[in-house]
Length: 275
Length: 287
Image 1: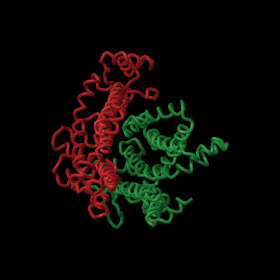
Image 2: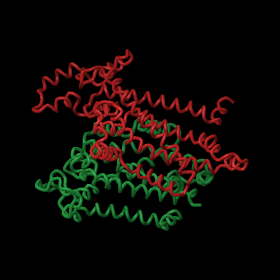
Image 3: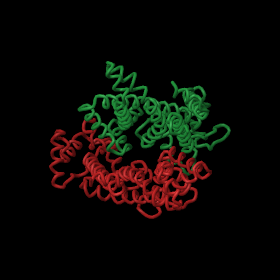
Image 4: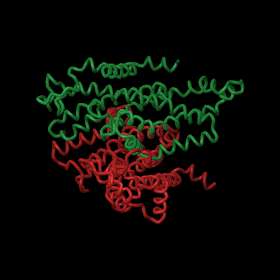
């Protein structure tokens, strides 16, 4: 409770949270807010530079870039958010079981996570996505595959250090069951660090998801998604750079907001920075 | 991977318009040994491997090992150039930012590294291509051939991403070291600030830098899939992506072996370096 209180008092945190909120609300309501239909093609308006009518210009099919970026945000941002939610919960769970149980289960789970950590993340993700075939769901699964071990490692390390503390022994000596110990004594103590990692991960996931889509392994056309929009616009970089810049800047801005948010949460939660 | 519907033969012939009859596909599969059960294929591959034969590519029909080796120099070159640029930029900037903590320079450096951390590599590279190749017309758009000019942009792209991480890390490490008692002690004895920085602080900070370097070198040797693909840089990362997309298993297997080798080698070298650089580890072993 104390940590939550400290966070909500920070002005920087409030501003960043509102910015992230605006981002999420605007993209959630994008079908209503967008000035044009993001799917309707109008070839007479193809590749128009930004103007009063089309604030961010139009793409090669004459679709309004602003509308596409807004609707694309819904795909990119919410997919990244759910991805982070899934891997942080799953990874933490694996880490807690591994650290708490120890022994063979621990060895097995950690070797499995080693396998996923041994490869450069992106290449492995491309391999998984390549095997599963294109599509947003498969890209998410590929990224989930390569990203959960980070949380498992983190949670396991935390559990191991908690296990050596006296309050943990006290809880066990007084007869608390495994479930009670995990939920009452371990989870509350590691949620902070997991939360910080997860918040910082949102930005990374937005970038990696967009990267997979950029390679053609994510969202399939005509679904607007920032990475695939950039990939489609690549050949027009010289003549109509806005086709690349609009989704690119959208990615950049969202990543900056979520990274700053993560940094703020970490600074507030970390007692070392509170001097 | 083998369990997926569709194999290299499908991937190869599906691109031909109109498609190819099943007989031709079957003939090609027999030629490549793809009609045999998966375990037999694996045993054959393993048998070849211990004899130094990694098989032939399903796509080009050429031997895997020479093809793979021919892609290595490009990746190695890119690794060396981007790592050198990163190190020469990051260490001075990180130290400067730490020494001038909370002053303008520190804020500028921190702002820039933050921005660098939030830029996806493919966006950085497209921005660089836009400004340097298309607007200023200084550099070629795509690599294609390896030359002094074509290596600049991929190197810059990689160095921007890596420096952003390194500078932050160097800054934090140096700040931590500067708080320690031995620095206060040295200052009290009248040791010059520059000597403290070079002889003591940087030496300790090297450990952090080496850990980072080991991680970067490991992943750079595996090729940077996206950067190599964008710049058409003919390295192993691009080879891996192409092989994965075309289900060219012998090539993928060669890549996996390469990654395993790197993983082991980098870990070993890092441990040895720790041994040289950290007296605590060194003495713990000799005692």
